[in-house]
Image 1 (cartoon, rainbow, N blue to C red):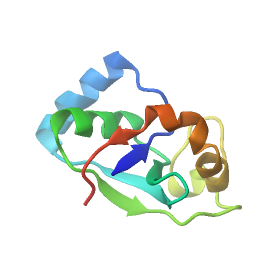
Image 2: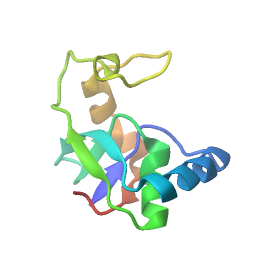
Image 3: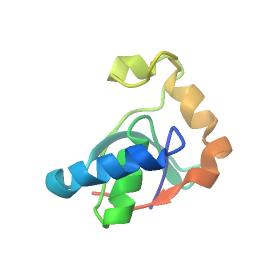
Image 4: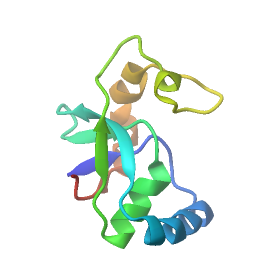
Length: 105
């Protein structure tokens, strides 16, 4: 199954995250089911998803419901910019080239 991450992955930060995940194991990622893209759309954890794929670890999905009004910050996600869940899911096609194939629990 593919996960479309919310952000591009920085190679230096990815190396740090991989070291942590080698100790911690599979990440838990908040994501929205997006059958229209044939994937999950992550609302956090781009580096953890990429690290899991490289390490051969499954990703544990904490499902978030699609919403026109709920904000990333409602789920403890996002940085200085706050978007609705709908904004992230509906624009996933723009990030489709970032899709990462992982096993999902």
